[in-house]
Image: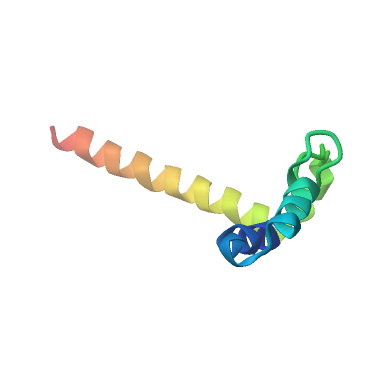
Length: 77
């Protein structure tokens, strides 16, 4: 859905004004807009998403690498 809203934003100059207003209202309306909905994610859903797991693993590994580098620099000086 975010890709769709991005395409609309990029091509806004080619769309008629009424069409652009309708699409903007669909995405950005404060109470009924698609992008302003509250989506609740449970912890189980986050753990089931492989992309989230990959991001957590990358962050943990990068922090270990930084700790090792800082330890080596500290031992040198």
